[in-house]
Image (cartoon, rainbow, N blue to C red; front, side, top):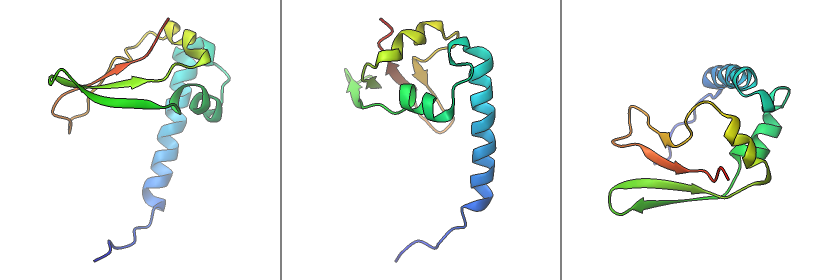
Length: 99
């Protein structure tokens, strides 16, 4: 049986507002990205190939491909090494090449 159709408008507006706030926070706290657009941030940092694998049967690890602008990751003053949400039983370890 197919799932019922859902009107995306209620959550879409909230999502767009949150993304605007997130981009503003990135601009305020990461000077190299000041003035960038969502498209630039998405292209340079968020849209990349990665691989998820179990690390020694201990934790999950996300390894991301290296990109040209990764040297700017050294200027971030917050952690990019772990992702943990309340619904996750354990954190996801993220490997960014900061070299």
